[in-house]
Length: 428
Figure 1 (tube, rainbow, N blue to C red):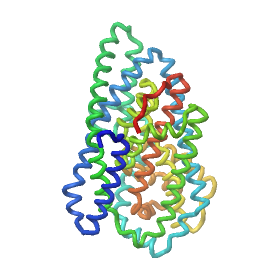
Figure 2 (figure 1 turned 90 degrees about the horizontal axis):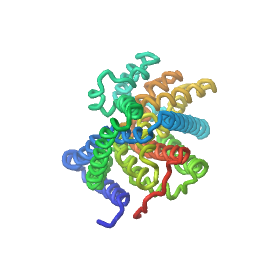
Figure 3 (figure 1 turned 120 degrees about the vertical axis):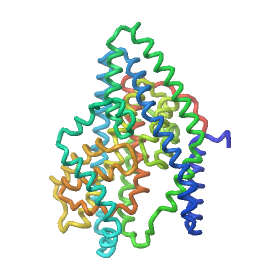
Protein backbone atom coordinates (compact mmCIF):
# COMPACT_ATOMS: atom_id res chain seq x y z
CA UNK A 1 0.00 0.00 0.00
CA UNK A 2 2.87 2.40 0.77
CA UNK A 3 4.18 2.05 -2.79
CA UNK A 4 0.73 2.61 -4.32
CA UNK A 5 0.37 6.01 -6.05
CA UNK A 6 -1.93 8.54 -4.38
CA UNK A 7 -4.66 8.48 -7.03
CA UNK A 8 -4.93 4.70 -6.76
CA UNK A 9 -5.30 4.97 -2.97
CA UNK A 10 -8.05 7.58 -3.43
CA UNK A 11 -9.81 5.42 -6.02
CA UNK A 12 -9.60 2.40 -3.73
CA UNK A 13 -11.04 4.48 -0.88
CA UNK A 14 -13.94 5.56 -3.12
CA UNK A 15 -14.78 2.00 -4.19
CA UNK A 16 -14.57 0.57 -0.67
CA UNK A 17 -16.65 3.50 0.65
CA UNK A 18 -19.40 2.89 -1.91
CA UNK A 19 -19.46 -0.86 -1.17
CA UNK A 20 -19.50 -0.27 2.61
CA UNK A 21 -22.28 2.31 2.25
CA UNK A 22 -24.33 -0.07 0.09
CA UNK A 23 -23.97 -2.88 2.64
CA UNK A 24 -24.93 -0.61 5.55
CA UNK A 25 -27.91 0.74 3.60
CA UNK A 26 -29.18 -2.78 2.90
CA UNK A 27 -28.70 -3.65 6.59
CA UNK A 28 -30.66 -0.48 7.48
CA UNK A 29 -27.72 0.86 9.51
CA UNK A 30 -27.74 4.36 8.02
CA UNK A 31 -27.34 5.93 11.46
CA UNK A 32 -23.97 4.25 12.06
CA UNK A 33 -22.56 5.70 8.83
CA UNK A 34 -23.98 9.19 9.45
CA UNK A 35 -22.87 9.35 13.11
CA UNK A 36 -19.56 7.47 13.05
CA UNK A 37 -18.22 7.44 9.47
CA UNK A 38 -19.37 10.65 7.76
CA UNK A 39 -17.65 12.96 10.34
CA UNK A 40 -14.24 11.77 9.08
CA UNK A 41 -15.21 12.87 5.57
CA UNK A 42 -16.32 16.24 6.93
CA UNK A 43 -13.01 16.62 8.78
CA UNK A 44 -11.11 15.85 5.56
CA UNK A 45 -13.04 18.48 3.58
CA UNK A 46 -12.52 20.99 6.41
CA UNK A 47 -8.77 20.33 6.36
CA UNK A 48 -8.64 21.03 2.62
CA UNK A 49 -10.75 24.17 2.94
CA UNK A 50 -8.63 25.29 5.88
CA UNK A 51 -5.46 25.29 3.78
CA UNK A 52 -7.06 26.62 0.54
CA UNK A 53 -7.08 30.34 1.40
CA UNK A 54 -3.55 30.40 2.91
CA UNK A 55 -2.31 28.56 -0.19
CA UNK A 56 -3.94 31.08 -2.54
CA UNK A 57 -2.58 34.08 -0.62
CA UNK A 58 0.99 32.83 -0.35
CA UNK A 59 1.39 31.19 -3.78
CA UNK A 60 -0.25 34.11 -5.60
CA UNK A 61 2.00 36.67 -3.89
CA UNK A 62 5.09 34.59 -4.73
CA UNK A 63 3.97 34.02 -8.31
CA UNK A 64 3.17 37.69 -8.97
CA UNK A 65 6.35 38.95 -7.32
CA UNK A 66 8.41 36.63 -9.55
CA UNK A 67 6.91 38.25 -12.66
CA UNK A 68 8.88 41.44 -11.88
CA UNK A 69 6.97 43.26 -14.63
CA UNK A 70 3.40 44.63 -14.77
CA UNK A 71 3.22 43.92 -18.52
CA UNK A 72 3.77 40.20 -17.80
CA UNK A 73 0.86 40.27 -15.33
CA UNK A 74 -1.33 41.97 -17.92
CA UNK A 75 -0.43 39.35 -20.54
CA UNK A 76 -1.01 36.49 -18.11
CA UNK A 77 -4.34 37.88 -16.90
CA UNK A 78 -5.64 38.68 -20.37
CA UNK A 79 -4.92 35.22 -21.77
CA UNK A 80 -6.34 33.49 -18.69
CA UNK A 81 -9.64 35.39 -18.78
CA UNK A 82 -9.94 34.90 -22.57
CA UNK A 83 -9.53 31.12 -22.41
CA UNK A 84 -11.81 30.82 -19.37
CA UNK A 85 -14.61 32.77 -21.07
CA UNK A 86 -14.28 30.84 -24.33
CA UNK A 87 -14.37 27.43 -22.65
CA UNK A 88 -17.40 28.43 -20.54
CA UNK A 89 -19.37 29.67 -23.56
CA UNK A 90 -18.57 26.45 -25.48
CA UNK A 91 -19.69 24.37 -22.48
CA UNK A 92 -23.06 26.18 -22.41
CA UNK A 93 -23.52 25.75 -26.17
CA UNK A 94 -22.76 22.01 -25.97
CA UNK A 95 -25.30 21.70 -23.15
CA UNK A 96 -28.00 23.49 -25.16
CA UNK A 97 -27.32 21.45 -28.31
CA UNK A 98 -27.55 18.14 -26.45
CA UNK A 99 -30.69 19.16 -24.54
CA UNK A 100 -32.43 20.22 -27.76
CA UNK A 101 -31.32 17.07 -29.56
CA UNK A 102 -32.16 14.51 -26.85
CA UNK A 103 -35.16 16.42 -25.35
CA UNK A 104 -34.86 14.84 -21.86
CA UNK A 105 -37.85 16.82 -20.51
CA UNK A 106 -40.26 14.99 -22.81
CA UNK A 107 -39.52 11.67 -21.07
CA UNK A 108 -40.95 12.73 -17.71
CA UNK A 109 -44.60 11.79 -17.22
CA UNK A 110 -47.22 13.74 -15.27
CA UNK A 111 -47.15 11.41 -12.26
CA UNK A 112 -43.37 11.65 -11.84
CA UNK A 113 -43.44 15.42 -12.35
CA UNK A 114 -46.03 15.94 -9.60
CA UNK A 115 -44.20 13.56 -7.25
CA UNK A 116 -40.86 15.34 -7.71
CA UNK A 117 -42.38 18.80 -7.31
CA UNK A 118 -44.02 17.74 -4.04
CA UNK A 119 -41.04 15.88 -2.57
CA UNK A 120 -38.42 18.55 -3.25
CA UNK A 121 -40.46 21.75 -3.07
CA UNK A 122 -38.87 22.80 0.24
CA UNK A 123 -35.31 22.40 -1.09
CA UNK A 124 -36.26 24.30 -4.26
CA UNK A 125 -37.82 27.13 -2.24
CA UNK A 126 -34.62 27.59 -0.23
CA UNK A 127 -32.50 27.89 -3.38
CA UNK A 128 -35.03 30.25 -4.99
CA UNK A 129 -34.92 32.48 -1.90
CA UNK A 130 -31.12 32.72 -2.07
CA UNK A 131 -31.25 33.45 -5.80
CA UNK A 132 -33.84 36.20 -5.37
CA UNK A 133 -31.48 37.99 -2.97
CA UNK A 134 -28.68 37.74 -5.54
CA UNK A 135 -30.97 38.85 -8.37
CA UNK A 136 -32.35 41.89 -6.52
CA UNK A 137 -28.92 43.20 -5.54
CA UNK A 138 -28.37 45.19 -8.76
CA UNK A 139 -26.46 44.60 -12.03
CA UNK A 140 -23.10 45.82 -10.69
CA UNK A 141 -23.29 43.97 -7.38
CA UNK A 142 -20.85 41.24 -8.57
CA UNK A 143 -18.32 44.02 -9.24
CA UNK A 144 -18.90 45.47 -5.77
CA UNK A 145 -18.51 42.03 -4.21
CA UNK A 146 -15.00 41.68 -5.66
CA UNK A 147 -13.68 44.57 -3.53
CA UNK A 148 -13.57 43.68 0.20
CA UNK A 149 -14.34 46.26 2.85
CA UNK A 150 -12.30 44.17 5.28
CA UNK A 151 -9.57 41.90 3.95
CA UNK A 152 -9.27 39.89 7.16
CA UNK A 153 -13.02 39.23 7.14
CA UNK A 154 -12.70 37.97 3.54
CA UNK A 155 -9.81 35.72 4.63
CA UNK A 156 -12.12 34.00 7.11
CA UNK A 157 -14.71 33.06 4.47
CA UNK A 158 -13.99 30.55 1.68
CA UNK A 159 -16.92 32.01 -0.23
CA UNK A 160 -15.07 35.33 -0.53
CA UNK A 161 -12.20 33.94 -2.58
CA UNK A 162 -12.51 36.59 -5.30
CA UNK A 163 -12.09 39.32 -2.67
CA UNK A 164 -8.97 37.60 -1.36
CA UNK A 165 -7.55 37.26 -4.89
CA UNK A 166 -8.26 40.94 -5.62
CA UNK A 167 -6.38 42.15 -2.53
CA UNK A 168 -3.50 39.70 -3.01
CA UNK A 169 -3.07 40.87 -6.63
CA UNK A 170 -2.71 44.41 -5.27
CA UNK A 171 -0.01 43.19 -2.87
CA UNK A 172 1.76 41.43 -5.74
CA UNK A 173 1.61 44.58 -7.88
CA UNK A 174 2.98 46.59 -4.96
CA UNK A 175 5.91 44.18 -4.59
CA UNK A 176 6.67 44.52 -8.32
CA UNK A 177 6.62 48.31 -8.21
CA UNK A 178 8.86 48.90 -5.17
CA UNK A 179 12.65 48.51 -5.14
CA UNK A 180 13.84 44.92 -5.18
CA UNK A 181 15.98 45.32 -2.05
CA UNK A 182 12.81 46.31 -0.14
CA UNK A 183 10.58 43.63 -1.63
CA UNK A 184 13.10 40.78 -1.30
CA UNK A 185 12.63 40.13 2.47
CA UNK A 186 8.84 40.02 1.99
CA UNK A 187 9.07 37.69 -1.00
CA UNK A 188 11.57 35.42 0.80
CA UNK A 189 9.20 35.18 3.77
CA UNK A 190 6.28 34.16 1.57
CA UNK A 191 8.45 31.69 -0.37
CA UNK A 192 9.40 29.99 2.91
CA UNK A 193 5.77 30.02 4.04
CA UNK A 194 4.76 28.55 0.68
CA UNK A 195 7.08 25.57 1.24
CA UNK A 196 5.54 25.04 4.70
CA UNK A 197 1.99 25.10 3.30
CA UNK A 198 2.88 22.62 0.55
CA UNK A 199 4.26 20.28 3.19
CA UNK A 200 1.03 20.65 5.21
CA UNK A 201 -0.90 19.65 2.08
CA UNK A 202 1.26 16.52 1.80
CA UNK A 203 0.36 15.67 5.40
CA UNK A 204 -3.38 16.25 4.79
CA UNK A 205 -3.29 14.05 1.69
CA UNK A 206 -2.05 11.12 3.76
CA UNK A 207 -5.56 11.15 5.22
CA UNK A 208 -7.27 11.38 1.80
CA UNK A 209 -8.13 7.66 1.29
CA UNK A 210 -9.87 7.58 4.68
CA UNK A 211 -11.66 10.88 4.03
CA UNK A 212 -12.84 9.78 0.60
CA UNK A 213 -14.01 6.41 2.01
CA UNK A 214 -16.16 8.25 4.57
CA UNK A 215 -17.61 10.65 1.98
CA UNK A 216 -18.57 7.86 -0.42
CA UNK A 217 -20.11 5.70 2.32
CA UNK A 218 -22.23 8.66 3.49
CA UNK A 219 -23.27 9.46 -0.08
CA UNK A 220 -24.45 5.91 -0.66
CA UNK A 221 -26.67 5.75 2.44
CA UNK A 222 -28.12 9.22 1.79
CA UNK A 223 -29.18 8.57 -1.84
CA UNK A 224 -32.99 8.75 -2.05
CA UNK A 225 -35.21 5.99 -3.40
CA UNK A 226 -34.95 6.12 -7.18
CA UNK A 227 -37.88 3.81 -7.89
CA UNK A 228 -40.11 6.66 -9.11
CA UNK A 229 -37.33 8.68 -10.68
CA UNK A 230 -36.57 6.66 -13.80
CA UNK A 231 -37.47 9.58 -16.05
CA UNK A 232 -34.59 11.58 -14.59
CA UNK A 233 -32.15 9.05 -16.02
CA UNK A 234 -32.37 10.61 -19.51
CA UNK A 235 -31.69 14.05 -18.05
CA UNK A 236 -28.72 12.71 -16.08
CA UNK A 237 -27.33 10.91 -19.12
CA UNK A 238 -27.66 14.10 -21.19
CA UNK A 239 -25.58 16.02 -18.63
CA UNK A 240 -23.03 13.20 -18.41
CA UNK A 241 -22.74 13.01 -22.21
CA UNK A 242 -21.99 16.74 -22.32
CA UNK A 243 -19.42 16.43 -19.54
CA UNK A 244 -17.85 13.45 -21.35
CA UNK A 245 -17.50 15.50 -24.56
CA UNK A 246 -15.88 18.36 -22.65
CA UNK A 247 -13.50 16.05 -20.79
CA UNK A 248 -12.42 13.66 -23.52
CA UNK A 249 -12.91 15.65 -26.74
CA UNK A 250 -12.77 19.39 -26.09
CA UNK A 251 -9.96 19.60 -23.51
CA UNK A 252 -7.66 17.05 -25.22
CA UNK A 253 -8.11 19.01 -28.47
CA UNK A 254 -7.13 22.25 -26.72
CA UNK A 255 -4.11 20.60 -25.12
CA UNK A 256 -2.83 19.14 -28.39
CA UNK A 257 -3.45 22.31 -30.43
CA UNK A 258 -2.34 25.04 -28.04
CA UNK A 259 0.00 23.33 -25.55
CA UNK A 260 1.36 20.38 -27.57
CA UNK A 261 0.72 18.16 -24.52
CA UNK A 262 -0.21 14.47 -24.70
CA UNK A 263 -3.74 14.14 -23.20
CA UNK A 264 -2.91 10.76 -21.65
CA UNK A 265 0.07 12.31 -19.85
CA UNK A 266 -2.18 15.19 -18.78
CA UNK A 267 -4.92 12.96 -17.31
CA UNK A 268 -2.38 10.78 -15.51
CA UNK A 269 -0.87 13.89 -13.96
CA UNK A 270 -4.09 15.41 -12.63
CA UNK A 271 -5.82 12.14 -11.62
CA UNK A 272 -5.48 12.81 -7.85
CA UNK A 273 -7.12 16.23 -8.23
CA UNK A 274 -9.95 14.79 -10.35
CA UNK A 275 -10.68 12.01 -7.88
CA UNK A 276 -10.65 14.47 -5.00
CA UNK A 277 -12.97 16.84 -6.90
CA UNK A 278 -15.33 13.91 -7.53
CA UNK A 279 -15.46 12.85 -3.88
CA UNK A 280 -15.75 16.34 -2.36
CA UNK A 281 -17.86 18.11 -5.05
CA UNK A 282 -15.81 21.22 -4.33
CA UNK A 283 -13.29 22.95 -6.60
CA UNK A 284 -12.05 24.91 -3.59
CA UNK A 285 -11.41 21.77 -1.55
CA UNK A 286 -9.54 20.20 -4.45
CA UNK A 287 -7.54 23.37 -5.20
CA UNK A 288 -4.44 22.56 -3.10
CA UNK A 289 -4.08 19.18 -4.81
CA UNK A 290 -4.86 20.66 -8.24
CA UNK A 291 -2.06 23.20 -7.80
CA UNK A 292 0.39 20.53 -6.72
CA UNK A 293 -0.52 18.24 -9.66
CA UNK A 294 -0.33 21.01 -12.24
CA UNK A 295 2.95 22.40 -10.93
CA UNK A 296 4.81 19.21 -10.00
CA UNK A 297 3.32 16.63 -12.39
CA UNK A 298 2.53 18.76 -15.46
CA UNK A 299 5.45 21.17 -15.29
CA UNK A 300 3.45 24.42 -15.22
CA UNK A 301 5.61 27.14 -13.68
CA UNK A 302 4.45 28.17 -10.21
CA UNK A 303 4.05 31.83 -11.17
CA UNK A 304 1.43 30.74 -13.73
CA UNK A 305 -0.35 28.06 -11.68
CA UNK A 306 -0.54 30.27 -8.59
CA UNK A 307 -2.42 32.90 -10.60
CA UNK A 308 -4.50 30.85 -13.06
CA UNK A 309 -5.76 28.06 -10.78
CA UNK A 310 -7.10 30.08 -7.80
CA UNK A 311 -8.85 32.37 -10.27
CA UNK A 312 -10.22 29.36 -12.15
CA UNK A 313 -11.57 27.74 -8.97
CA UNK A 314 -13.66 30.89 -8.51
CA UNK A 315 -14.72 32.00 -11.98
CA UNK A 316 -14.25 29.03 -14.34
CA UNK A 317 -17.07 26.50 -14.01
CA UNK A 318 -17.44 24.69 -17.35
CA UNK A 319 -19.18 21.68 -15.85
CA UNK A 320 -21.58 23.91 -13.92
CA UNK A 321 -22.31 25.99 -17.05
CA UNK A 322 -23.11 22.92 -19.14
CA UNK A 323 -25.33 21.51 -16.40
CA UNK A 324 -27.22 24.79 -16.09
CA UNK A 325 -27.92 24.83 -19.83
CA UNK A 326 -29.20 21.22 -19.88
CA UNK A 327 -31.21 21.71 -16.67
CA UNK A 328 -32.86 24.89 -17.97
CA UNK A 329 -33.99 23.19 -21.20
CA UNK A 330 -35.05 20.04 -19.32
CA UNK A 331 -37.26 22.02 -16.93
CA UNK A 332 -38.67 24.08 -19.80
CA UNK A 333 -39.54 20.92 -21.77
CA UNK A 334 -41.18 19.38 -18.70
CA UNK A 335 -43.19 22.42 -17.60
CA UNK A 336 -43.82 24.70 -20.59
CA UNK A 337 -46.25 23.92 -23.45
CA UNK A 338 -43.98 25.38 -26.14
CA UNK A 339 -40.27 25.08 -26.87
CA UNK A 340 -37.96 27.99 -26.07
CA UNK A 341 -37.17 30.22 -29.05
CA UNK A 342 -33.65 30.94 -30.31
CA UNK A 343 -33.40 34.38 -28.65
CA UNK A 344 -34.28 32.91 -25.25
CA UNK A 345 -31.69 30.17 -25.67
CA UNK A 346 -29.03 32.72 -26.67
CA UNK A 347 -29.84 34.59 -23.46
CA UNK A 348 -29.33 31.33 -21.58
CA UNK A 349 -25.79 31.20 -23.05
CA UNK A 350 -25.05 34.70 -21.72
CA UNK A 351 -26.78 34.23 -18.35
CA UNK A 352 -25.32 30.78 -17.69
CA UNK A 353 -21.82 32.08 -18.52
CA UNK A 354 -22.16 34.99 -16.10
CA UNK A 355 -23.87 32.81 -13.46
CA UNK A 356 -21.08 30.23 -13.56
CA UNK A 357 -18.57 33.00 -12.90
CA UNK A 358 -20.58 33.97 -9.84
CA UNK A 359 -20.89 30.42 -8.51
CA UNK A 360 -18.98 29.65 -5.34
CA UNK A 361 -16.55 26.74 -5.52
CA UNK A 362 -18.59 24.68 -3.07
CA UNK A 363 -21.09 21.80 -3.42
CA UNK A 364 -24.41 22.64 -5.16
CA UNK A 365 -23.66 26.37 -5.50
CA UNK A 366 -24.57 26.06 -9.19
CA UNK A 367 -28.12 25.17 -8.14
CA UNK A 368 -28.60 28.67 -6.70
CA UNK A 369 -27.28 30.32 -9.86
CA UNK A 370 -29.53 28.08 -11.96
CA UNK A 371 -32.54 29.86 -10.48
CA UNK A 372 -31.29 33.11 -12.02
CA UNK A 373 -30.87 31.37 -15.40
CA UNK A 374 -34.42 30.00 -15.18
CA UNK A 375 -35.88 33.37 -14.22
CA UNK A 376 -34.08 35.15 -17.06
CA UNK A 377 -35.47 32.64 -19.58
CA UNK A 378 -39.02 32.79 -18.21
CA UNK A 379 -38.92 29.17 -17.00
CA UNK A 380 -40.82 28.39 -13.75
CA UNK A 381 -38.27 28.36 -10.91
CA UNK A 382 -40.34 25.77 -9.04
CA UNK A 383 -39.19 23.31 -11.71
CA UNK A 384 -35.90 23.22 -9.81
CA UNK A 385 -37.51 20.54 -7.67
CA UNK A 386 -37.51 18.21 -10.68
CA UNK A 387 -33.72 17.82 -10.65
CA UNK A 388 -32.90 17.81 -6.93
CA UNK A 389 -33.04 14.05 -6.54
CA UNK A 390 -30.00 13.36 -8.72
CA UNK A 391 -28.17 16.66 -8.28
CA UNK A 392 -25.55 15.31 -5.89
CA UNK A 393 -24.00 12.65 -8.20
CA UNK A 394 -24.15 15.08 -11.14
CA UNK A 395 -22.51 17.74 -8.95
CA UNK A 396 -19.63 15.34 -8.32
CA UNK A 397 -19.15 14.77 -12.05
CA UNK A 398 -19.36 18.42 -13.07
CA UNK A 399 -16.82 19.37 -10.38
CA UNK A 400 -14.35 16.99 -12.05
CA UNK A 401 -14.89 18.87 -15.31
CA UNK A 402 -14.45 22.21 -13.53
CA UNK A 403 -11.09 21.12 -12.13
CA UNK A 404 -9.99 19.57 -15.44
CA UNK A 405 -10.82 22.82 -17.22
CA UNK A 406 -8.74 24.84 -14.74
CA UNK A 407 -5.76 22.51 -15.24
CA UNK A 408 -6.17 22.62 -19.04
CA UNK A 409 -6.24 26.41 -19.21
CA UNK A 410 -3.29 26.67 -16.81
CA UNK A 411 -1.26 24.37 -19.10
CA UNK A 412 -2.22 26.33 -22.23
CA UNK A 413 -1.48 29.72 -20.66
CA UNK A 414 1.88 28.43 -19.36
CA UNK A 415 2.79 27.23 -22.84
CA UNK A 416 1.78 30.57 -24.39
CA UNK A 417 4.07 32.55 -22.06
CA UNK A 418 6.97 30.07 -22.19
CA UNK A 419 6.45 28.76 -18.65
CA UNK A 420 5.66 25.10 -19.34
CA UNK A 421 8.59 23.05 -18.03
CA UNK A 422 9.46 19.37 -18.11
CA UNK A 423 7.33 17.61 -15.46
CA UNK A 424 8.75 15.42 -12.76
CA UNK A 425 8.60 11.66 -13.14
CA UNK A 426 5.24 10.28 -12.01
CA UNK A 427 4.87 6.98 -10.15
CA UNK A 428 1.74 5.28 -11.47
